[in-house]
Image (cartoon, rainbow, N blue to C red; front, side, top):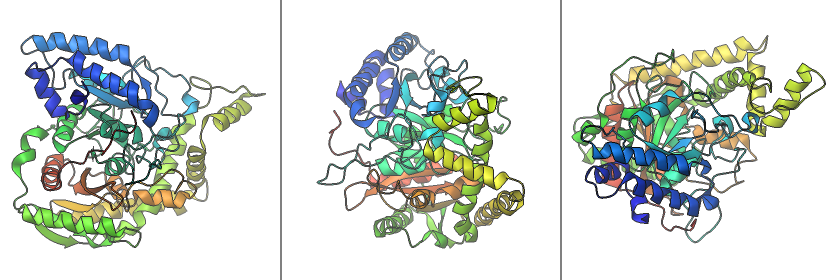
Length: 493
């Protein structure tokens, strides 16, 4: 049955339709893989085997009736622990939420269940999505299924959606939900040889997703292939009246157009992304990606995004400021952890001191500082002005190009502890991805090669607002040229 876990989402969907296997068999195969491998990877913080099998049985009944099956009928998925799942523990991988079980379902996961998907469980992530390596989770770090050639040291899977990327790479689910505030879908996808797409801000509802930075957060899928990403995004996306930032726009059939090719597509290459901190391997892969796009019929154009150098510092003002505001609700009074104090203020302080981890505290402190009297104009307001300039750079670029091609990360996966002690080094992991969130644009990471250490590297494509269809088409072209990259040996069990 392990062969079933190696299927792509699209292959599994087609196999179910042809009755080559049942959803119960497919789900059971994944549950067995989780049972055998999760101790080694720590990708799932809450497997839900009984619930999964119930859903699979219901799916098999619908699959047996003509015209009753949904778009994701019977397909087992993993859900990032940032998405509220009714009746199932949702913690954002923080101690402060304790054993919180939501009384409601996030809109994105509700869309998945309506389409017939099966929930295998909740996936690990950096605490409140704050991190680039999945080392800040209260449940412990996720381990990348990939290893450096000839070595056994444990590598990070990227973050914050490290549980999602590791589970997909290790065949512990067919696909997974994820969120991206500054690169938290694309960066982990790049480090694990998976595909991750961050849609345009407003394309997917944020309702029922634990908030980090409300003007930057966006949900998206991590999958094995570009086609799978197209299938997942079609179901996850859509207007939601419960989310005031959700955009009422038609959701195209992304899967129908991914094979249309890139002939005549204008591909932009921003000169500002050739930074000093980028590894030679990432630079070489970028050049290879440019050559692939040319060979496929696209035209290459050098562009300038002059305010790129200000994106990271502006992001690390805006995101912590919004986090400081959003996380004020965790006070030990209404739900989650409570540490009683001598009075109400002391209870707040004791609860938050015990409940939040070091990285979350750091960002709350930064955010509170930049929003404080006397500093709001100097920091937060100025960062918002820079954000407008970054968006303006892209607006000008769209007159000349249809998509932008860059590396996803400056270097391949690193070992635990290599960068953790240096927050600035960790923040630099997002250097190629934060501009996309600051401008509200769609971006996708596609596996494109291996480092000299034998670990994955990804290329990033950035698209026009709400033009995920073109983005997926260009990503398919890279996947066709580069091939797929699977973790070489199943050491985790």
